[in-house]
Length: 637
Image (cartoon, rainbow, N blue to C red; front, top):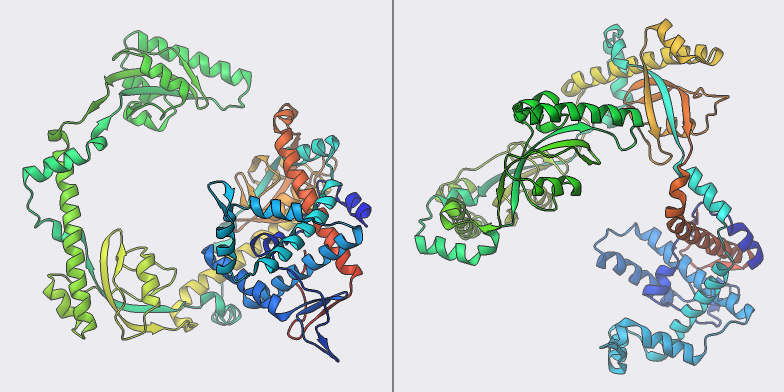
């Protein structure tokens, strides 16, 4: 059986099917006791695996620990039924691996077991095994040493079988080359787009059609559950204006935060950029350099650098005369930084090449390392202190106001007592912004956790503090057609326009298949030919088209002999037909530098697949009977 598994795992391109059984081995070390646990005609265990039984107690422990693991990671656990099935499946896997270890004559001796337990970080103190710590950890987790050591032995046995399977898996150099070529192949597509918008003016819809469309698509217009609240915001800035500052406070703040006001040496510079793509042709690079040299000559001749930048620079700073402002070390590309810091104010650089292109730099000023004096940052410090003290006042006042709300005082009166206003935003859903407040996730979460007529907890977020009361929860509902008629009609018209665009594209595709000349077809039909260049194999995105996974899948099956994509494809609502323009082979010059990482990744994938297939064969050959309450195990696909 192992030979068959090794052969099937040799291909590094195999789809990963393995569901991580080691989760149970590593975190829980669950074991399966052998013996008779079945009553006459009735199973009293979670499962029987050949002649071994998995008890309900063992299953319950595994299930609880699996649920706890998700909680400890801060993750939402999958549905309980899935977890139950997964826990039992993993218990069966470890039992099958132990039975296979017995068949192969594998064993874990006492020395191996002691070494493994002694090396576990959870049982070490200062890098050495600590027996008292070992017993304490076991007790905290409800284990007797003998039970834990039996479980550990079984885990290690299962690991030996897995390692035996993995040892027979090897990725050849030829497979590496083939996979590298597969993953790094690129292609160019040429396409014509039939915009759905071109047909909107031709679409007419009747009242009956609108009603039918709404009836057929009601869920699309369902309103989410929403909540209506009244709230009062206690923002630090509402209270900071009353804070009176004294010079000693400002001085003390400055002294305590002196590191914040230390400035490294910086420069202020302007530049003119001539963009050159990293993969530009030699001719394009030569042309860009020639233009840069001409502009540099003008700058050296006394022309106004800022005006030259406005005229020639291809950077976003062009409109500002190429001004980059102040910057320190580690901000710009290394070559740019070196050139800029080597200049004196007023000097021009020679042409500097970076990954962005070619630059001409003019240094405006040099600022040595220094500490900002107190007078230069006094206003900033005053604002910081006022905000800090304003937040403290806001916190005190919001706590007082919250107590009044809990005592039954009206929120309007509570707000008035604090000199603030009550806000009554429109009802909002869990994933909607609050009108007038924007995205307030903590407030939204708390509002949905509070019953109608109740006062919520104080909400703290970057804007300050908020108290609120819930007026009502509005259940999710499908609105009346009249309330959403404009949107329904617009959606129907767009759907009809999309169908019309697809129909025209289908007609064009039929012509293209008869005569695969996209340029001639586009000229005849008065359409524009566009290109989607350097398309990678993975992900659904195509340059100039957006996400179109079905088109990408089809594109990589095209050949020079059969270049026409077989269907009409959707690109953001428009219809597209496409042809293969070119296939770009992988850059083999990168193979040697990427070979090791590729081998490691494919080896791991192949080993994982081999272990999973081995387990599948063990399951297929075993007699497995599930206990009461278990119908099926999760699929390994």
